[in-house]
Image 1 (spheres, one colour):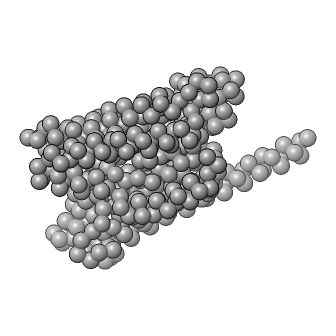
Image 2 (cartoon, helix red, strand yellow):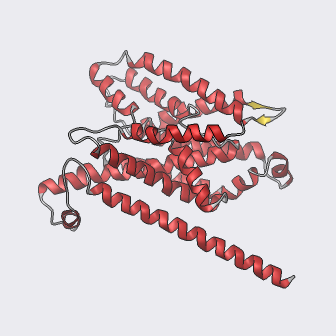
Image 3 (cartoon, one colour):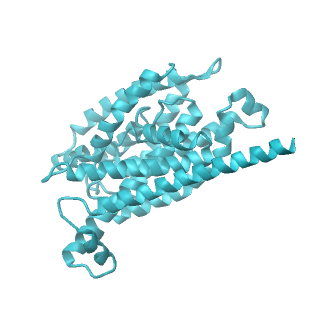
Length: 346
């Protein structure tokens, strides 16, 4: 009996070490993708020039390219990728639906709609009211999530994964139509801003955006990690969770609320970047398994790498212009979604 306990402990230690090594590899990959992104783009910046500029010895042009244009954009792309990945990971766990993701369920569309309504009603104010927009996005995302949850949830059989995804697609279609109707009422300047924003462009990011999204994620992601064991229990099913003393509905609401809030701040800054919350948790789960204490941070790193790489591709694929980051992510994510849908038992 004692030998079995020792073997089990040794096995757990080996699994833990393996998972931590994978996590560290993902971290190194994120750092490498950031370094490549810094040195990529229409305005060339050699690695040695980058190092010299970061040490304070760069020219005015190099300082402008690195600190004012490239660095805030790279930080925003990483933070958005991390946030959307964590949000998608939580939603997939809570709903027990591997196809669930804030963008596909219409939550991002609800957040974006509120920001557009604000832009339409406040023409004299700046579009970049970054302190107001996250709260408006949160309001829109929360109302959308509430509607989807209420329609998809039935007392007899709980939250049906198939009903959830169909409800989300329907709500997203309605919100997209309403958004299109409102966009045509904007003036030319606002229309161009909104069109770029809706396409998922991170161009024009600044350190205000970085600070705001950091403040939200510093609060919300540790909260999600704190609830990781509750997520593990919820995955066992409602009856077992009740038996273990978990208030299923209350915990489900708290976790969905946290995921929606993370998604809202990402939408307010980067808007229509879908599929990150779908792809990153799946890749992370294959790498480190389903335990949420390690799955959530690994998903965050994978999401950061995905959006960072997509943003780099968006900047370099066309020599004289750039493609919005959201379109590059969609090109990667849409085939993956179809692959998962084909494999799904639903």
